[in-house]
Length: 101
Image 1 (cartoon, helix red, strand yellow):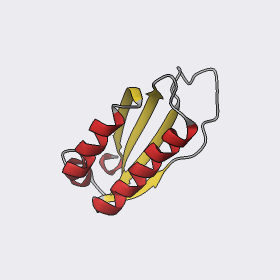
Image 2: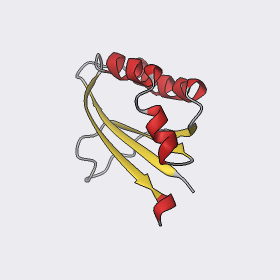
Image 3: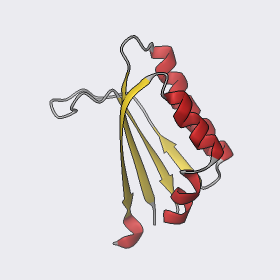
């Protein structure tokens, strides 16, 4: 079973494509540091009428809630969150535990 950590972001005006890609690469790097992250998925946004202005999204997978709870306060994750504040204007996080079904 899997826990899905879904992250949607709106970037600040003027953020370049290179900065956005570096941000996504940073999330992939976190998965190499924090071993409870099992997979990181991202790609190109498909614009649609219901996207509510979100610029990008990433899905991270964990084996269980404990894995997510290890990731969230981890120093490497917290440093990434702080640095993300330079380019991210808004974020929404939605976690899904399919181990509960």
